Amino acid sequence: AQKITQTQPGMFVQEKEAVTLDCTYDTSDPSYGLFWYKQPSSGEMIFLIYQGSYDQQNATEGRYSLNFQKARKSANLVISASQLGDSAMYFCAMGLMDSSYKLIFGSGTRLLVRP
Amino acid sequence: SAVISQKPSRDICQRGTSLTIQCQVDSQVTMMFWYRQQPGQSLTLIATANQGSEATYESGFVIDKFPISRPNLTFSTLTVSNMSPEDSSIYLCSVEGQPGADTQYFGPGTRLTVL
Image 1 (cartoon, rainbow over the protein chains, first blue to last red):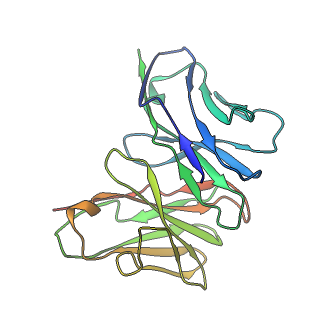
Image 2: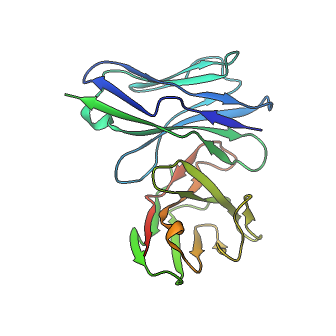
Image 3: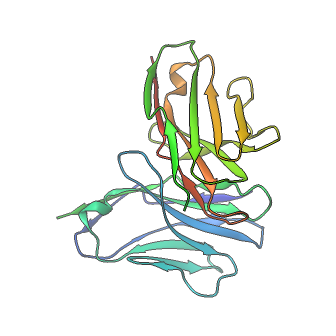
């Protein structure tokens, strides 16, 4: 069965520093995608970054990068130069490459950026 | 990415009543998804709605409780029927980013409180 695990319920980071949010996954399917979403207090889900299981290079999107270690089944999100606006819930998700396109979400990590 | 709107953005309802949530997309999409996020929890997929076919429900969700319509490629509704306080959640619709693409984009969500 597919599963996403986020072991950090909450994280603190000082403004302008980098922070890593952990995510591990479990699947027997060779084809999958890994996603990170940000959910501010308003409740919307904001797509941040995507990594395909066959991608050779780690994905990057501006200040976000995904540290993909396939053998360890981990897909950690790195946020560089943290900003106060980065304070939010962060969810890791796995998408199945079958026809369902379903997303399975982890439990989330609440990030608080300190000034 | 598609622009997705949801109505209502929030509502407070009485036990035993029903609420229909609308999801509108600014472009045609094949697949639309409905998720539930209970307070302090992660997202759980309720069902997948494809135009022209019956919605596919996940384990634990039934059509009588969460009927879904998908009359065209830009619109879907989710009804929460015979509500109880346990139905208090954020309900989010999502769509595929591009036909066959992996990324899903989410609407702003509907925050439902059942008294």
